[in-house]
Amino acid sequence: MNFEEKILKESKNKQAKLLRAAKVAAKSPDTGVKILKKGAYYVIRDCAKITELYLPHLVYSQLKNPIQMLEGVFTKADCTDFLGRAKKDLVTNQLLNLIIIDIKKQNILESASTVFKQPDLDTSAFDEGDEEDIYGDYEAGGVTVEEEPEVIVEVQKDILQLLLDAFKVKN
Image (cartoon, rainbow, N blue to C red):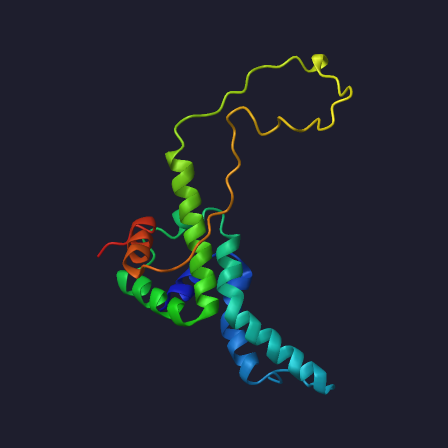
């Protein structure tokens, strides 16, 4: 069973079971139905093909805490195969990027040891007055908004180790 199939297997979402039927419909869109319009054939076929490609993305994205939920599910071979396919296939690489972003977000949350305590302000003292930019000092005060990390899969060994650590893969 490959990496994506294990994601689907772990999900409680009913659409996670759609892959088998999508594979059938992609090859033979008229299975179990009488198609009355030529366009319907192509709609069924192409929807099934899209489902084959992107169902793991959808299901993964719907997991509440995907990294924790998938701990212990994968083997080193699963992760290695997944990374190999991600190098060659855009769709697989997109799923890998989603996973890496979630791992990085989790690591950032786990490493945040301090909670920002904002000083109490008397809001009645604020007056818009003649200020040109009343929002100008909003970002001041120690709170920074981090942008989404740019994820580029370059070093396979580092990425493999990241997956193995995040999913607590036992060798």
